[in-house]
Image (cartoon, rainbow, N blue to C red; front, side, top):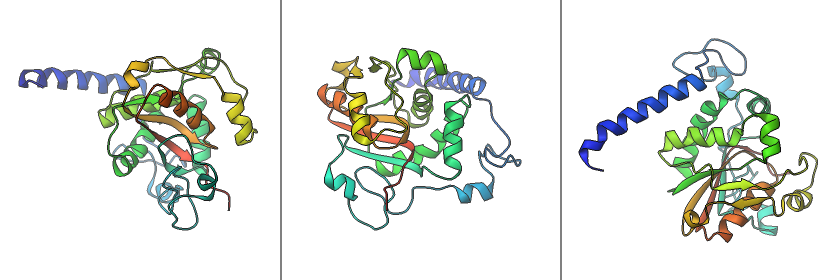
Length: 248
């Protein structure tokens, strides 16, 4: 970039930070116990230590916590996921369950907290990404909720990582049944044909970072990855706030 563009780049970056500050105001209490915190922290020291971080043994493919140090878990040995790799900051359990639920039901400011937690996971585990995509919602679901939490997280990560979030690259073409009580097979059937790549040319030969809140069975990540690979993406790297651990 020519030197004379640098001041303009800094100006726009400051404007973006101010806009984010207005949308996601800083909170000065712990997100879990509500004790006072300092220096922009989201959690007090005690709650920070108790968070179920995904920093033990994990599958090198799906990124879920496993009990022993094997390259891949039993489920990935039985059937490899479609995506290239997945990683998460937390195991889905403990206080993380409530935080994710709040994120989905109005606490939009948690996008900043979760981006702060997932950024180091990306930097430690992934070498590169051409751009970011987020798991899209159908128009009906978006109207009901009012926002897409995965897109908010992707926006925050885009700023922190300096990687473009192509929010329009993917679309969800239809509303699907709630997946909470469905098996992996039922989820995959439910999602078949529900995603479409809107910017196919942009995906060709690219490494794409797919952002979502939770990796549960992996059905959503697989469904999105299929359409990205069909658009000739080179790699699909999944990054989530949390992942459901493998069954013992």
